[in-house]
Each structure stands twice: as structure tokens, then as C-alpha cells.
Image (cartoon, rainbow, N blue to C red; front, side, top):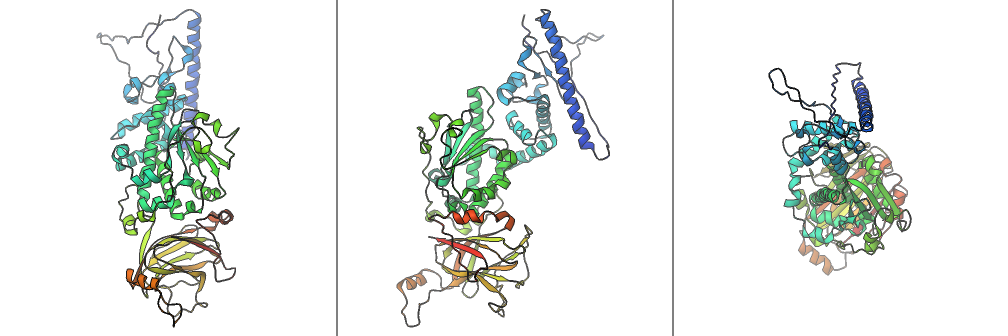
Length: 590
């Protein structure tokens, strides 16, 4: 005889701690642990008596019906709202346990109930306490959240990310749901069209699945011009691209769960770093990457199952030093890094991906249809005004600033350094005219007074101003000194560089108007100089710049790797006028 319904056993408890000498949280954890232990013990007792019934040949228990009261009215059973113990089917003791509760607690799940088969099929192994947390959090969302209720798999990710701490998971999830609603993320895949530039130069795409059935995403980062994409599209477009990939990853996880018949809640990412060089360490690009990581970490927890980093060059430790602090510790444990061809053979790529789907560019036989990438043409770069005026929905501002330089009125950025060996970095493009770039140091603060102050790592930035900071009465060599050789930058050039400070004090980054002059008094003007003077304004230049200061303890240990990883794009050189004063470098590209 077969009993078609579950036999349910219910248990509920309440805890209200008014005061416990400041240890209320600890007492709550202990009580929760004891309560979970009691549930486990109750399960053992129930299973014991069910086995007794089975041994006695009892295979069917009549369905329980509520007794009628004195008026002949059948009373209904009210299920508890706190936690519900699992029920056990009589016909299969070893199948596991199931939660029996009101359907509204698990709206949206199959058959409107959270039973053992559903848990095993879509959620994976959960302890009674973890299952209770999931049900309670869903119930709380339905009572308080106005809008679309996320699926069980999505809620479970946030619980896992906070080790099933209800309060932390609740805050974490609410912030993400608010963010999704504010930016209409649920409609992103249907409303956002990828720019053609991304389709041509973004070297990433989905490619089959790994050995565990997880969707596999392949990114050839070393072949991608990150600087060109940031300059041509802006951070906002790149972030939308990454968010779309995450939304697509969630959809593929659901699809693979149906295909393989087991819960698949995350994906695997394979990153090929062949071709990675100093161009990828462009500071504004790294800054944009860090901001994108922050958004992804805050809204897509527990979605990365494994990250395989292949053919990592010597420059990789520098990039890792900059990126790793923003990545969750649990996520960092999922990273596997292979240098050179170490990914081939035992313990390599084939341990995680079937041989028949290994991409051709990694020695496999499977064609991987990805854009070839390459350098984004500078003609596609956006101007400073376009980036600054861009409507940044997901990001608050642009990392670039623009400045006009007039003849006789240099543009200067004042930076206060309180810690020696800090690193000043810069990146700027000359969009109009020619400029002369200088860096000066002074032990006393120039005038006018400070405008902005940033108290990070013992470093304070006073920000750009439109007046000349270096007083006309100051004497070079006495009141201030030049710490890097003057660099003439022509229109259309891009300049990147860094300066390791030797002393604390005030550093001034200065851009001056540069007028084309003859090399000697008796020589005639060159044709190039005449043409340049006709093409540009004779009294105005324009730059688009980015500066940042790294604390010494953040950058120390990376300079060795940085200096030992030269590439055709970036040749590091020491260019200083004060012997042994500091280490500085600038690279120019056209």
C-alpha cells in the first residue's frame, strides 16, 4: 500500500532575550545551536520508530484527519511560522527529509512546496538549520519586500555568502534588491544593445561547460585592449557588459540544472593571459576594473565556482596585488593560476574541462568563436567632455578630468605626501596643442590654501587649481626643486608614468603651454611648426588627465616586478635631474 502524502512532524520555538550582560548575540547563537541539535535528535527518534514499524510489516498508515469539535466543525491545523521540521515518507525512509509548510513560504518553487526532491534537485545538500534560514528569509521577503521575489537559488547565494547569518544575509540581499530595482537590472538583457565596438574588441564569450556541468566563460584578457575600450566606451558600458554576462550566467546555470538533473548555481571562468603586458596595468583601466569588481561582488555573490588563470606572465603579480584586496576571501580560494604551459598535463586544465571542449588556442581541438581583439583605433576614443557628461547610472562619476592650459597660465595639481616612498602615478592625453609636463617638490605648502583633502594612507591631495601655485618669488633650487626632467608632449600623444617619492612634502604636477620655437635665433621656422601653428589655437591647449597616489606599503614589492616586465608598448626608464633623488618613468604613445 502506498501513502501518497508526506507524514509531517512539526516543531517550533521562540527566543526573546531582553538583556544578557552584553552577550545577547552569543546567547542567541548558543540557543540556536542547541535548538538545531534538538531537531537532529528528534529526527533520529522519528526514524527509529519508523524502522520499527517497517520491521513489523506496517507499510501504510491511514491519513490523519483533524478531529471534530462539539459542534461538528472540523478544526484546521495551523502550521508554525518559525521553523518547521522535516517530514519523512513512510514508503522510503532513506530518501531524506522534506519541509512541509504553507505554500506561501516558498512561492515560485516547483509545486509550491519545498520538499526533499526539490531540495536535492535544485538547491543541493542543506542542513536543517540552513533550510530553516532559507524559508524564514523567503517569508520575511514576502512580508516586507515590494516587488519581484527572487528565486530560492538566488536567496541561497546570499545566505551562503554570509555563512547563513540571517541578519547579515538579510541586509546584504536587501541592498542588492534595491540596486536591481533602481537600475532595472532585470530588464538589462532585453533592453541593452551591445555596442559594435564590444562585439569587435571584447575578447570573451561562453563556451560549453566544465566537467561539473557548470557554464564555462572564456576571456582572452591578454588580447584585449582594456585602455582602448575604457577610452572609447567609458566605464558605464563596460560595467553593463559585465552585468549582462552575469545575468546570462545565471540563466545558463538554471538551464544546466535542468539538463544535468542536479543543482548548478555557479559557473567557471577561464582567463588566458597570453599577451598581458604593461598596457594592461594602465592605472585608470585598473581603477575601472576595481570599481566593476565592487559592483559584482555586492550583487552576484557565490556565482563564481572556479577561476582558471592560464599562461600568467611575470607582470601578473602586480595586477593581482592591485585587484585581490577587493575580492572576497572565499572567492579568492577558487582561483587557480598556471604560469607558462603548466596547465598542460596532469593537474592542469583537463582536470576541470573535458578534452573535447578545450579551446583550440590552448592546444585543444574545439573551435572557440571569440573576437580576435586588437588595439582599438584612437579615432574611436571619446573626448573628456563626453566621458564627464556621460549619464553614469551604475557609477557615480568618471575617473578622468579635463583641463585647459593657457599661454602664461599653467595648470597644476598639488599633492601632499606625508609618507616617503609613496608613488605618484599619472596618465594624460593631449587633445589640443603641445604641452610641457613637469613635476616639482617643495617642503612648504604653496599658496593658495588647500581646497580638498584626502586622508588615505597618510596621503592628502589638494586637487587641481586654475591659478599658478608656485609663487613668482620662489627660486628654483632654493624654494622648490624639479624632480623629473621636463617632458614635451605633442598633440595626440598619450603619456603614462609614475614617480616614487623620496621625501614627504608637496609635489606639484604642472602642465605648461608649449609654443613651437626655432632651435636657434638665426634658423628659419620649420614647415611643421608653421602648419601646427595654423591648426591649433595659439594661446590654448587641452588635456584629459588622471592621477593617483599609491601608499608605499601598497606598492612596495611590486616595483621589482613592474620594472622587470618591459614590453614593446611600455619601456621604463629612470629620468630624473636629481641624482639618486627618486625613481620616475614616463611612457609616450601615439
